[in-house]
Length: 479
Image (cartoon, rainbow, N blue to C red; front, top):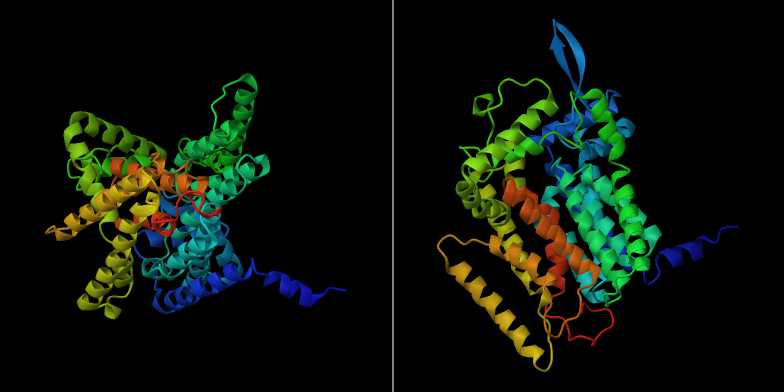
């Protein structure tokens, strides 16, 4: 006979009560916002919802085109399939509606808080890990985002879960395999997740070194085995989708066919550093298939970069500014979906509040490597603290503040060895890697503030690590 009381007590044990409470705290405001503010999907959300409905109806990731007056099934993969596939699964069971999408988004967003807490626990003390989770649970931008039919929360959840698994048991082949597989699932939602694969390999290499470089045949063989496992398990969930694309599209596509499109947007003569609509008159008018079109735009974008490299490089600060300097996409999305509910004054005030919350967290993330060090190292950390504070003051006094440099600082500093600090634990290293790959991606392509939503939990984790005790003061602190 099952002892339900013992089962409940175990579930509510000292280790389990906080994640359960954190999920509840995160879910309540997300459900309220999602169920009361969500409307028919707009912008990219329209296509994610459309793809999900087609999948739920049994037509796969596709649309219909009219040929000779007859509707013909037409395969599609312009956008990554992962988010639409998840929505399609729940649409199939509960019916395709905005309520179902809102509930899924609220649950996914709440699980992001759990993943952040779990990842933080592998490198921070319990109180600091809890703080990171609470920041994510109550972050106004992340709460409001749950009303949007967009991919960022799911991409964040999958990527952070992969990092959590890798950081929890470095060197364990089973955990490494599952971590890599989850990273592959993340790539089906956000293909640039694959850029994190080398960093997972580096974490394994550092674990094998055990702090000492001793290159040998046995070490090389062990590392090669782990890299092979990483690659195989990461591409295991991606390969079937790639095979599908090779079979039904006009040519092979790894995940989606918007990479060349996005490169052209960031490089063509009318580029502004953010999204601009491409027209056939811009350069790719004589194409038919989706893959052919994407390859045409890729070649076009590369050609534009070669022609005017200085102009393309000069757009990088603007692209990063559009990505990190403000937080307004969610408000614009909801206002587009239901204009009557959003006056200009209301939209302006909510944007300002969200932006203030975002940039504050971004600046705090830069203090992740600043510790209350002792002896000579103390002066290095005090100098670093003063430099960040002075730079933040300078930015705030500017006529038009620009906060994107703080994203680069927050990404770079955890990778730099400092006096009084030992090697960064995998949780901090991988968090910085995700932020770094995000910066590089949008410096190359183009920027929009919605793209920083994927790394907002990273900002929370790094902010929670700020001004920690000196090395050795606490076994669970980041050192």
